[in-house]
Image (cartoon, rainbow, N blue to C red; front, top):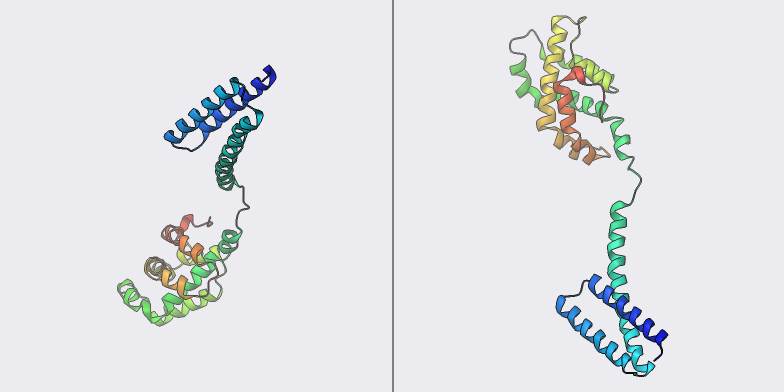
Length: 219
């Protein structure tokens, strides 16, 4: 075997050694392959025929294929993790009507007889008449179209008389009760398109109803 062939074989053996160490083979298997390579080096140096030395190349080819498969699987997984997928438009669509839908659902709760258990103790020390109050809420429900109208129904202002201020405070208390205890049933039992998004927004809505002066947006 001439000097050039020997150098090529040594480079090939070095490559095989590198691949073995980088592969996911067990330590015992790596030792077995290293011994195999050492025997091939000795045989090549003693002048064995090219046909026999082709087994080294075949071994290198098989091991390279195994390593490439492992590497490809890892790189594919990494690419999938780092893949810059377009952000879903569902949250933006659903945010458009969140305040409106929650506001109308709260109004429906207040108007219904289900709220009697909570409404009666709230108006005990006020001059609120239940029938008149529910008529007032029903009218507000018809004009409920977003954050501003819901915020107006939650937050008393200077122009409101004592009765309207009591209406709004009572509505705020009932809204908190609805979001805490009845909103999940409303979300899953209703015709909402984005049920999971509305479920995730429950606590944001609760914080905004509890602090209506900060209720300017939903993100």
